[in-house]
Length: 303
Length: 310
Image (tube, rainbow over all chains, first blue to last red; front, side, top):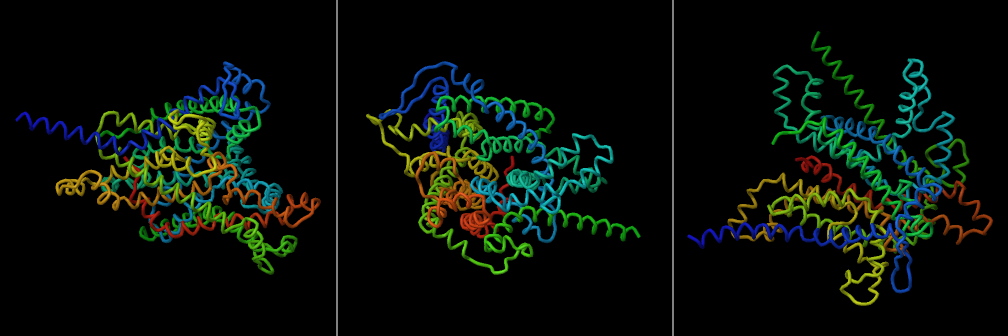
């Protein structure tokens, strides 16, 4: 009898050990290549770091690096604020657009497969190098001029904007619409993965719920707001987090470029790390705030 | 009458949807089409007002120049080997880790999974310098005496962070694999256990073959992101000949080889620079487009099956 219970216990702990065996690569990686450098980066931000022949030496300077980043560096604070404001502007656009597209692609229509293939194409076209080359490209510049003078270009917003002005829409609102339309190509590029997440979420809603609602006499509009929206709302949160992370690590981001410039050749490793910390903490605070507000309003599924 | 009305509404809805989808598809395809069209042009075409999309004499000259200046066969192979190595390693590690999180109950499982997400949330720029220095003077964190080995310039840093699941966006891949395994029914596994297979054998022979849809997504993402990556390659392979690097210097190298100093300065703002770059960009993304066309059927189907859903 005694032997039997011992065997049961060891079976369970054996199963647990196997679990640890499976995730052990991550545990090793987390400690060696994440936690260790993470702690080092705290130390580096408080030190002056110099590379010598045989390694690097640290000289403790306290908060000097942070002071230099904020008060001495000519551009850092401005780029930081502009970058974060740009992010706040873009996140609702990406979110609404990708939710809309996911609903569109989720419907049955001819050519759906082709449409999906095209909509996920931006995943493979978002290299930083392409973006850089385009910025200096003659053809792109010619197009920008066209867009400004409104003869051609890909999208022209002037007519729409003056129409909305004449309808007495608020000035800021109309400007934001114009901004949104001009940003459309970039918005589409950042939307591929949020669309993917929304699409997967939409497909997880069982059809029987809609059928029941239909029998009860609900219109499509009602079942969208009463079924689809609450069930998908937790994915809005997932997507906000994803879009945030994507936006603050993308190489197109000017702060990211600045961190790299400053580390090699600019103000030095210490200041660059201090800047990275300021950036990280600002983003984390903002993300925490947004997630905190939104998670009050999302529908939590009862398990 | 009512049936007729219903039909009209349905038709006009389909029409609006069709216009929207075609319009948005056009915006997505537009930059790509523009690059293809301009890369086939000669310099003459750019000044010709009557030429809009299609060149008068389509030429592959830009591609030839870009091909030889980029040293394409060699750099392609470099890029391909690195990317294949990294994406295979990431796929393998995230598969194993994701399975561990999905199918085993152990103490601290929630904590470790929270840490996976935490790694995803911390920008790699924050730990860029410590990682750089650790690989520059790699001494296995104090285990090897002396100044350590310089691992920069080799594939080792990539392999180490990919195999341990803390590489480029690996948290996302672990998340995708875990969600997929959570959604799989456990009957197959139980049958295998009853037949006497151990957990590792069950994983390899039963679970992995059934996880192909999620694996396609992870592999495609990991391949694409590594192929396009300049962040880690600049950091760990400063002097590497990889496609993004040679693409960056394409017009500069053209100036060195073909032009005098005075012409070189003019080149950087010239039209020819942009058609040359466009040819280079096409050469750079062609392998990705090829991969995408091969995998897209699985990819699109996988999206329906994967359901990154709780």
